[in-house]
Image 1 (spheres, helix red, strand yellow):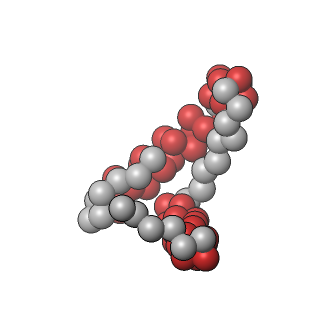
Image 2: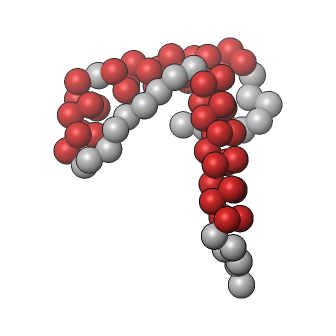
Image 3: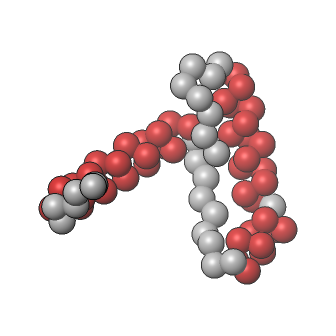
Amino acid sequence: MLAPAGTPKDVVARLSAEMMKIIGSPEFKERMEEIGAEPVGGTPEQTAALIRSDTEKFARLVKAANVVID
């Protein structure tokens, strides 16, 4: 789950806490397993770091593969 830039920190913290409850629930875990998904969660800071890391990784892959958008 993502929120717009500038969302108040208390709102982000509440959303994060509620999402962690959901991700940790047996029902959610079972449903994700059924569809072959692996639920992950973390703090807002961990999520931001993951997005930055993935963006850099995929940017390098696109550049190395000479992907061009027509």
